[in-house]
Image (tube, rainbow, N blue to C red; front, side, top):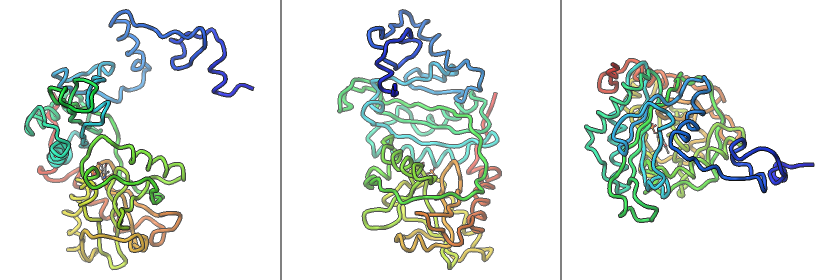
Length: 353
Ligand SMILES: Cc1ncc(COP(=O)(O)O)c(C=O)c1O
């Protein structure tokens, strides 16, 4: 009986172009694209299936402009970010034609770049203008804006000395967002977390984060929780985490060894409203042990694209009564209202043409 491996060594009439990636023995031949137009035609095949193109626009400082053709949304293979992971990134979401918290994300982006010793090809204000014009050109009303600063293209060496100019890339992704109302399961990650130097910089080295997410998914969980070397709760693989104690305190792990999430910081600003209403007793950051955290009344993930995701089970044990927490949803409402109807300081109207 043929196994997937053995069949790839059998002879067949298929050419390499018919079945890319399958080695058909003697008949396997690597196609050489004889012209750019032939290659472009091939690249376009992927995007002409009739489905809506999910990436309406990209910016590349290497090209020096905005690209609308998805087939051309590429970055150079000799870019230091591609082959050495020497790059940083950030995200901002677009809801109903408004960019949410663009400026705080941009601040963190440039802080990350500075820690990664990448000098931006543009000042903050120009980066901001490019991102706004990209969002406008994309016509996207709901989605994610993702952007990268890289040491840039040059050569394939470890040192970026041969990369003369840093590069800025950004892409718009059409995506729908809804407030999360269902609770999820999480596990404690066994994948080692990044050391504080790297965890506090939003750099492109997300291998531990990816492995941690895969580990959780393999166990039927949504994602994982990292615990640091001292036994304190850290964060999730691409989200922060927050707890409500039985005394109705909102507690978030301190940010010294983890990414300071823009959403978590905004939550800390907004949550005192619930204290004023007498629904929460206090709002603070603290070092939390696993025991304290597992004994919380409510637990949630916090991140830009959520903004709050209730957690109801951790390592197969219920959090609180195992139901979506009332205060979790009250915090979710606070953030969601801020995203859809918050003040001008948080929301920027995209100047679509
Ligand atoms: C490791 C990590 N922690 C936390 C967060 C949450 O940050 P934010 O609220 O800015 O999305 C993210 C996402 O950017 C992340 O990648």
